[in-house]
Image 1 (cartoon, rainbow, N blue to C red):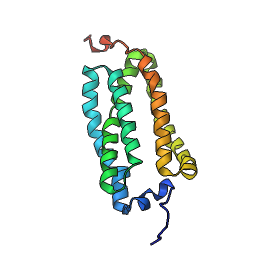
Image 2 (image 1 turned 90 degrees about the vertical axis):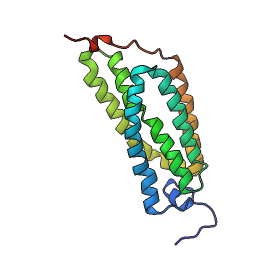
Image 3 (image 1 turned 135 degrees about the horizontal axis):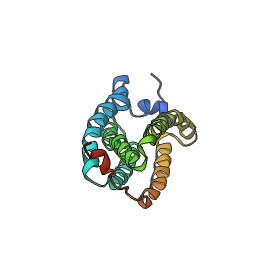
Image 4 (image 1 turned 45 degrees about the vertical axis):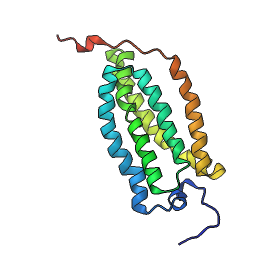
Length: 175
């Protein structure tokens, strides 16, 4: 066991900094997100059919970033687990709202391409997240999380100015 005088700052040492076992780390980074997000997506899909998708997404975006910000203040497994569960519930808005909006913003002949670009963006984002190590090494994992959250809140502001598209009722008509 390595004992350090100072809390490790690398993201990869978050489990050491918080005293997480391999199982706890796996739960926080995998299971808690996957299960919760999948169930939440079903609920948010239903809500996206009823309420303003734009307002649901704005509220969820600011709130999931808040949950992420809370992670930077966590000091144990329970705290980070609760923050990750909140994050994953709110991230459950992404796919159903995106698919619904893309369906209303594109012509039927463009929807395959629009969905492919959306899906590619998801995976490219995951790939680009590897660059977070640069922030972690420069700022420490807690400050790196705070910086990224600040950037997310700033780039979320333009969402207030995007109009909610009309729902495409033609898709619901029977032939």
